[in-house]
Image (cartoon, rainbow, N blue to C red):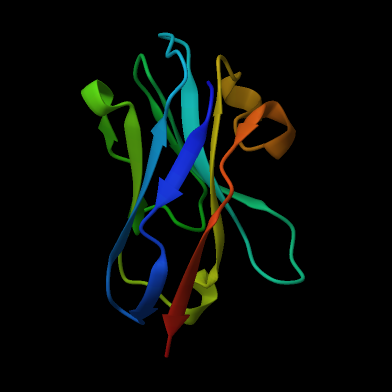
Length: 125
């Protein structure tokens, strides 16, 4: 998957929307999967969403209906569209990628060999 570079984090008021971007410089395969995790202070990294380059999206129940993961294939970029944000969304957000991830384990962080450096999102009340 190569290098993953996130952008778009920052400070946002509760209820507002924010879009994160992740661009990869690596080779993309039809089976490639890219996605997003987040980690708040004192908590484990948690899965948010993932998309398979050949089709198929996956969401954590906690963000289903609020977050989406659009993709721009010509730009090798995936996004995390965050709507109706709350202070509980405050965390460091990580982009992940791998050549192939089984749907049954797509929420497991150890399945992804490539990680971005993370981008901070802070939601104020």
